[in-house]
Structure formats: C-alpha cells, structure tokens
Picture 1 (tube, rainbow, N blue to C red):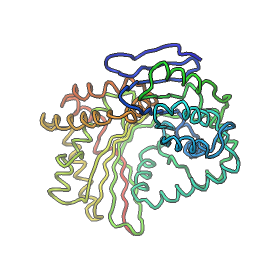
Picture 2 (cartoon, helix red, strand yellow):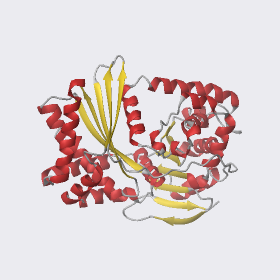
Picture 3 (cartoon, rainbow, N blue to C red):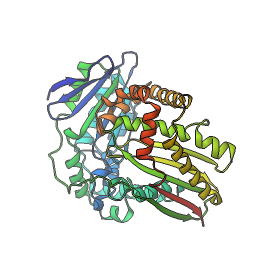
Picture 4 (cartoon, helix red, strand yellow):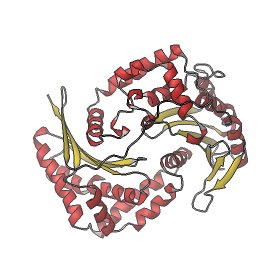
Length: 424
C-alpha cells in the first residue's frame, strides 16, 4: 500500500496529510526536538453510527478492542506498551471512536503494530464479552449517581427529537443485555474500515519512517460487513420552549440547564461566533451572567456556558448551580441577556476580551504532540483538518454586527430546551 496523494502542506499547516491507496488518511508532523511520538487513531464509528436497538455498541466495542486479536492475546497490548514506558487509552463520542498511544520514538515500531492489529482485527471473544459487559453496565449505573450527568442527558433527550445525539453514548442496560458478540463483530467489521479511519503521528518520527510504518501496520483491514445502517435525519428547529423536570434524593443544590441546537462543523464561521458568545455570556469572572447573577445579585452558586462543536448539529448550553427558589428568576435573567445580545451590539472592549481568551486557549491547546494530534484527528473526523487552520483567522475577523446576527438566528429566548433538577 502506498500513498496516492499529498495535500495541505503549507506554511500554515505544519503537518502533512496523505490519502493512502486503501482509503485511510495519515496526518504526520515531525517534531525533531521531542523524543516522544503520539499515535492518534480516529474512527468514524461513534454512537451516531448505531441504530436505536444497537445503542451503546460503539462504546462497548471501545472496551473490547483491548481484548486482543488473533495475533495479540488478552492483556498483551497493555503489557507491551507499559513495559516500554508508554501510555494508551481510548474514548468514544457520538461522532467518533478515538484510540491513542504515547511512547518514546525508539519504541514506536515495537508498539504501534500491536495497537493497529487489535483495532483492525479485534477478536471479541465470547467470554471476554460477557466479562467486560459487566464493567460497562457498572459504568452506566455509576453515571446514574451523577446529577450533572443526569441533567445533561435529560437536556439532550429534550433538545433532540430525532438525531442520535439525544441518546447516551454509554447505552442502556436493557439493550446492552441483548447485544451479542456476533452483533459487535458485525459493527466492528462494518465501521472499522480504512475510509473511516484517520491515523495521526506527531513527534519524533520523520516522514519517510511514518509512511513506511503506517503502510506496514494499517495495510490489511478485516473483510467488510454490513450491520443495520443508521439513517441520520436533520434535527428540525425548535418552535417553542421544551421543559423537563427531575427530582433527585440527596441533591444539595438545584441545577438549571438551558440548551440550543446550532449548526454543525460545516458552518465553522458561525460556530466561532457562538464560541465567542459563550465567552461573553458566562466565560470567566468578567462575563455578563457571572457578574450579574453570581457576583452582584448572588442568585447562583455558579454559572457557565459552553459551545460544543459537533459534526451534524452543535450544542450551546448554559449550566447553573443554584437554590430551587431562584430558578424562575435566573431563567428569566438569562433570557433577558439573550434578548439584549440580539438588540444591542456588544462593545469593542467586550469583543476584544472574548477574542483574546479564545485565541489564548487555542494557542495553549497546540503546545504538545498530544494536543496537536488531537486537534488534527478531531477536525479531520468531523470535517477536514484544514478547518483547524481557520480558527484564529475567523476569530480575528468576526465583527460585532455578525455576532448580533448569529445571536438572533440561534440563541432565541423563545426557542430552547431547559431541564431543572430539584431535591426531593
């Protein structure tokens, strides 16, 4: 297997992107000053790839990948990596499954083949499947003890009517009990294919060696299968306020969550604007909502806003920790501030503060090989790697008028979802 094209090599992007002949994407950046290499493998096989009845399969498979392959026994991968001082882990989201390995450059050729083999040729033994299912079930049950997790999951279910983003990545107990090893093998062979895979190598490995190694160890994927396809429909816009209320025992303080569905990764300029609006509303002690509701009026214990960029439809949230008696007052105050964003342009001073905060966050997130590998793989999985180059430029170019337009389009005080957690 040889690379068939090379692109996005410019003064702006220090990494080089290769499309290999089997459909796999390799992103490589050589950092001669570091003796470490981060291997970051991203697969378009997150929870959004599941049908409703297969819910939880992607996350469960993430666990089972580490149970080995025909060539790599159970626990052998961990033994090889740890005995060479390396670190490996994984994570699953709605949009991807993500596996990463950090090791000394001189141990990469000894360790990466093990990770590639268990990713491409996972055995999923029946006995290990049953054993690991108990681990996943305990993870689900533990999440039920986390009020913030419950509140966020309830918000997603209230906000999304049709999109898989409404489902928990962990899955549900009853459905997991009905999953079988053969179903998981089918899911693996369907989605863990080269056209869905991005391999990122960042650190002390030169380009020729990186290409040679990836050609060697990612050349033979499993024979493709076809599990039930999941048709993802566009999420219809909200036409009013959707409300949900939960009552939990042993809850010391209430939670108020508010959420808005926003454009996905293909609309990056809008996403940048929403990121800035998040900082202006509740990003740092000088932000509007923190100043008014926490510092001045002391109506909340804490408040924060967040914008989560996702492939299909992103999520803008405001999270509040407060006494139950203040919920109506605080929700109204948040809506008033949103209306203010729509009708009154923010000041240049406020805009410049928000821009500096986001630009500094971006700079700080590109300091290490692991951070660089994560950014490249993430953007290439939900959109394309070139998007990460545009982030600073788009932040600098956005205007007060554009922010006001974005607030009017996506942060309506009359169309959102809200969840309240109250003590029993």
